[in-house]
Length: 286
Image (cartoon, rainbow, N blue to C red; front, top):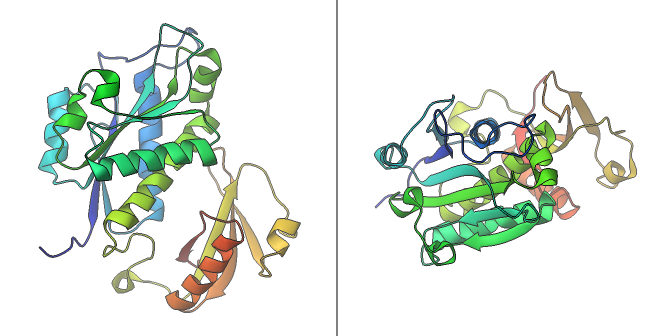
């Protein structure tokens, strides 16, 4: 079988419509279904903005109700390669907090590895308390959207709405963006690992509109001086661009100008080795 030319990921915002999901103890907080949709849409937005040859399919983009069968049928009908179901957790014990990633069974290696990637991103990069990867034996029951989907499938619990501190985080724009970016990075890594023949991080040659490239180093909520010591050690000119956005991250930082992808890739590895692990190559704009 020839390798696929592109990847399809189905992003599922859990609950919706008549099913609100878990509720916080604060009337000022959003319901689980609303937070799930916010994070799911952000994950899809990041994939569409930063990756190539990846098609994003959403199970819902508004406050609509879909049955579990409908979610499974949609994912299987699209012959998807990945299925990510976004949820928030709840517990009678208000002291319980942290993230979890669920798979049907640990024997599903791609799903298990993807779930581990997500929890690693939550813990090491997003600074969340990871409760690890769970399967049907941990839960003592199966999850329908994991058991019956025919692709790499993970259900992500982004935190406990029944914990006051975590509920505040889940309801914040900052928290939603951090969690979404962690899921995005894990997906990017899993896509590259599982489908090495699909170019997901560099713009395809046959659609290029520019002959120049630059390296996107990072984004930030607050203004950072481009002459700061962290940037200086790159020995490259760093440019800051302010975005016209309502998101918390308002600034993006770029370094270098390259006329070939091979040149950009060589420098990218050096940049990543100096601590900018999420750096990527993007077309240079005027």
